[in-house]
Length: 324
Ligand SMILES: [Mn+2]
Image 1 (cartoon, helix red, strand yellow):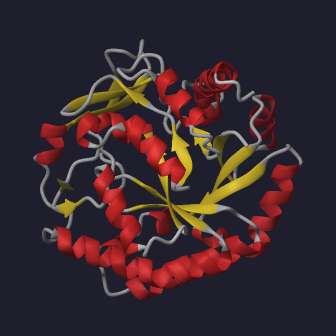
Image 2 (cartoon, protein in one colour):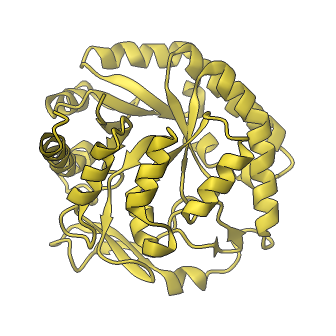
């Protein structure tokens, strides 16, 4: 089985949007759910609707539980939030969903701005300046320690791994983005390959914990994150890669902008070939796109070009390596 190109969808997406995705030759979608949609009935309804457009839900996530401040920072209601997370796993398990997403960043992805970049030909893209990010005050009332963040992750793993194993729903852990060791007083969980190994240990080696291999994050930090080619090989062999974010940037930190795959500093064809050579069967998406241009199809319209380019690289790599 080869990699499976994918696009995110929401329950509010129109039939036309789903038809457009279908016509791109996409068969797998990541379903973004609101908290009130985390019931078997609601998910089944979406699966049935998507099936009419030839679309299968490979994974689903609820942003509120994917990046949950109470869980990450051990706030008073964390057990309640972990119970909600586990309830979500039961529902997804019943619906036959392969995996859900987690990212240990209570304040989400940090960027300096969204603006026209040097390499975007007028497109509005994300821009990140490490100096500006590092100058930010604490995001919470106090700074947290590395030990606290890892203790909280351990606590979460101990409570959710048994349920993930029981339900068969795996978790894809995304790196902190940007991959800096500490931002706004909150240490990052994942900012290099060693952090991933530590996280897998916290899961007691359980396969229930996998990763979103975001090439964007690897490339933002470069060698400080790890050797991307060696890491792809190692984590593929260990069956950890559930999802690939196929994204390029113009440079490593301290300053980068998000670019089209063909415009960044990394050779994305070489990276694609490595996934293919390692027989990776993860879902693969472009992660981010330029801000949609008025009148050109919203997010799916913005995703379409880059998704097509990514599919082209994937097909070429499969052909070159005799896997197609
Ligand atoms: Mn990503």
